[in-house]
Length: 442
Image (cartoon, rainbow, N blue to C red):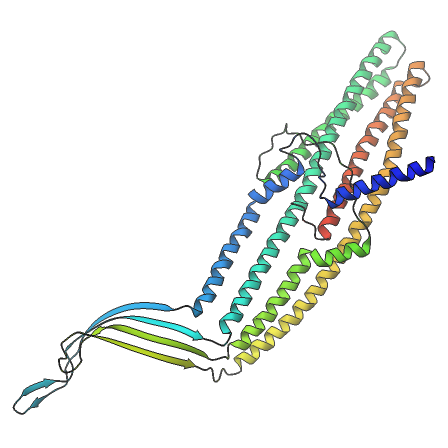
């Protein structure tokens, strides 16, 4: 009965953890709110200059699309001219007088309309290229956001680790100061030695130096975090210290399937390959003919019988343009594009191999971190029990003050190592999410 209950609880806990994983669990708990990880990731997406710059490139892509599509849109222009010519053609008519064939002052004004009626897919294929380029740009922006998110996550947990390390340092310092007072009293009573006092003072000095280093590292990491997020963090800022439990599906086959379907790196490689194919189609289409219409309406002089009179006029026409000979230019362009397609096909395969390697490494790091957590938790329990026994022995006088300090140091080191190992596990989980194409910033 007891085994069945234990099995039931184990399965229930596993189901809950899997549900948390599937629902996009939050890896940063705590009550600080403003400085929780999810909030910082959203702030980064809104504020980071690199992201904003990349997003502005989408505006350029839209304008480039409109520019290509304008090839099929009408163009209307207006113009006017005055020309003085001489000599003019004239002759004498017997009994009538002098007659002019054209005026000396030539005046013309009009509105011109020109439009490509049909180009047999030339513009359409160029538009398809621009649409694919915009899609590639979107994928590149998502990849940039993912890379920055991963960098922010590493920086965030580094700050959390240093924050905990400083607090543990302060706890150890308080313990040493208390022991220093105890040793001083015992030295005055003649039950201790000056060596014990000096050893305690040396440890206090080392702890002070270590705290200076920890504060410097924390300040540097806060500067990195500030640059990524676009917020200013002062030296007193606090981040949540609670590290939530994390369970990631580490089955290799499923992880690889998800990665090949969702990885930004693979999507970008495939889209580049697609663009190269569309560009080849566009090159093929450049030899297609085009049909255009032209119309002009306006006023001018020079019409008989009164060549000086300014009169309305118009012209309407349809034209066909057919490429005949390009000196093998199209042939060489196609050959160059085919070589580029082949290169990009290999680039896609290389991207898949890189993603596969990243997934395998992340899974192994995750498994190793999980095993290490179990070992370090055991070490922490042993260190905690060792310190408890050392306190009892010290009070009974069977060990010295230095032995008790050693036990205290072992306990603080184990506590810090446990925090570091749990953070390593979280980072490995995030790395696996990144490798499989899950969005870290959502």
